[in-house]
Structure formats: structure tokens, C-alpha cells
Length: 328
Image 1 (cartoon, rainbow, N blue to C red):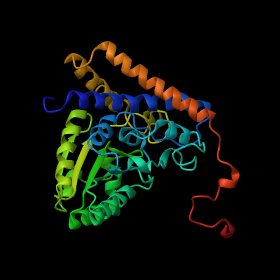
Image 2: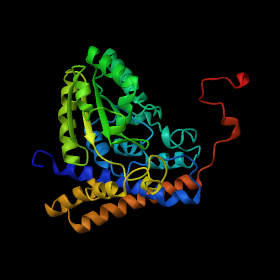
Image 3: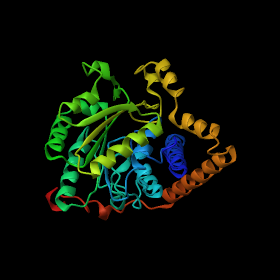
Image 4: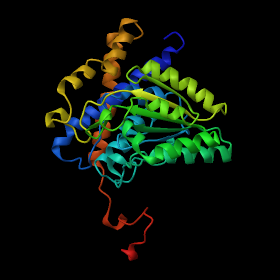
């Protein structure tokens, strides 16, 4: 903790709490059926998004996947626009056309989000190549799950990034499940980070539930990437609390053991970090409650903004798409 400033430590707590409270609000609102888009919740993985994005500049690029709310929030993008997108409103960050899986916030380096497994790896490599050509010293980050390791683009993207020494950080959020398929049923060895080493990429495995460990590892990685040392790979071991999609817990459907979920929830990254800051007197109980109150106020405003916004007009159906309307 001694090499991390007090401001950064508090920023990490704020972001983790904001992600958690935002997604808990989705869980609360979803049964009313005002939010129609499928949602893939990030609850349980907050330390990764916060620890990574605090190290990035506003114009650095991030490429996410279907489980993206945490990355969007940690990068600093507007939660009013994200909530409106979940409601399918024209004021949403993707004009109500992308839903939960396809947020965009160009001014925050979120050029577009793909729900295709592993697609962000190729997009991040491409953006990193563009940065090299432009000499703008930007870093591109690809967030992906352990399921993406089973895809061809994982190997193609890592090989190309290594070959060209691209300024890209690969962040594997290993929560041990691809949809409902456990990693041991898909991968012969538990060594995701070593796969990156096979392409000559510096890679490490860390506790993805320890936000300070994530922050410190990414700080060093980003420093090296900006210095021109090429890509770096970090496997963050973590766990999602909710099902693959939706607001329920999939152990209720027999998809994984309840005891496994309870074991990981006992190691909650948000609670662990909050308790660390309280016990070290970095924050007081009053300050913690004040942070929660401020975040909840932001989220309430985002919900009101979304509910009060309009749906896209039918005349907007073919705008911002590649195909021409007369070809349908």
C-alpha cells in the first residue's frame, strides 16, 4: 500500500462501489421489464476494471465484451448514457440500438464493444497498430474471459501483437466459466497466462479480487508498454456472482455448485478492500457512508434520466448502419 497514493486508493474504492451499486440497481429494476436488453453482470469482478482503468488516460482505448458495464464505468464514461442505453432510449450511449452488450463512448476511448467471444482481442491489436502508425503513445486494452482463450482470434491476436511489438495490454478475466462450462471441461491445463508466454509476451497471473495487486501490476505493465516494450498479458483470477446472463444465480439451475459461489462471495473484493481501508484508517465509517450516498444519488439520477428519455423514432431505424434501407 505504501507505493500507492491516498487519492488513488480512494479512487479505487469509489469505482468498485460505483460498479457494484450500478449493477445491483439493474438487479432491482430488471423484474419490472422496463429494461428489455439481456444483461451480463460484472458483480464479483469489480477489482479488475477499477485496477486496470485507473492506470489509463482518458484517450487510451479499451475493448470489452458482453460483460462490459464495469469497464465502461471504471474508464469514466457517463452512467446516465449507459442506463439510457439499457432502457433502449435515444439518449443512450449507442442511441438505444446497442443495448447492454454494445456501449460506445468515443471520448473515453471506448470505440465500440463486441459481444462476439474474443473479438476485442483483434480490435485492440488493430487499434494498437494504428497508435504505432500515428505515434500517439496510446495504450489499447483488451478485456476478455477465459472462454475467449478457446478462440482462434486469441492466438492470432497475441501472435500479431508480439510480432509487431504493439502497445496493447491483454487482460484475461478468468472467472472459470464460459457460459456454464467450467474451464476444466474445456482446457487441458490451468495455465492461461503461460499460453501468452508461448508467443514471447511477458505474462503474469494475479489475484483479480485484490484491487491493489491489479493496480500495481497494471501500473508496471502500462509503463513498459508506453516505453515501447511491446504487449503484456495479465491473467486475473476472479469469479462472477450472477449467472452468465440475467440477474439470477445460476446454481439455482444446477449450473454450478452453490458452495463454490458462497466460497467466492466470502472473498468479496469490494468488502475486502473496504475493510482494509477502514481498518487502516484511510477512510472513516462516516466517509464510507458518504461515498455510498453520493454514488446512489448518481445512479438514481441515471435511472430518472433513462426513464424520462424517449425511444428512438422509427425513422431512425436505418441510420448509423452500413446497409442501405432500399436493399432490405
